[in-house]
Length: 204
Image (cartoon, helix red, strand yellow):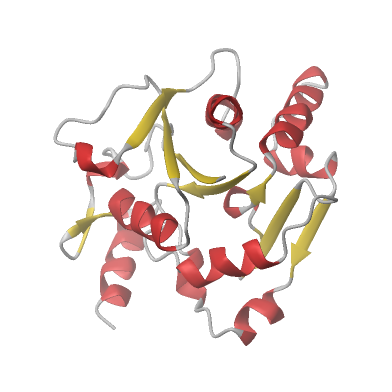
């Protein structure tokens, strides 16, 4: 079984408001990420937030599980630990990671990662315009959890440190561009100007 894990535990200090409530066209950013994951075949969706509470007004028909970030972890590792533990308990063999603030995520990218999955790799990681995108990786949850705990013991905070302790299949940007997947797929909305750009690109 394959599931999706959306990381939504950031404090949104640069944006100045909760990102999950922001809209691109008529849809909230996180709903667009949910749509991309579902279109790629993710059968179960998990959203990791700071408190694990269902958002007000959330469409329960989405059948999404909310989990709280793990205590005593830092940055995205807190959401990863919580979400991956939930995925393991559900029996998910592979987990597609996705931040909540990449609204133009293309399901074709996720399908490409799936086509490269192999038991010998703990993660399949795409390369975007700014380099590797570990938070868009397709991962084996048990293996990534083991890597997270190894990194935690070494007191390293970078998600790249987690990748370095795993067997990783890297998908080059050239391969991704060969499928005509646009760079906008990797647009991370951190600032108001990023939000304006995402809204403009979504009209094209």
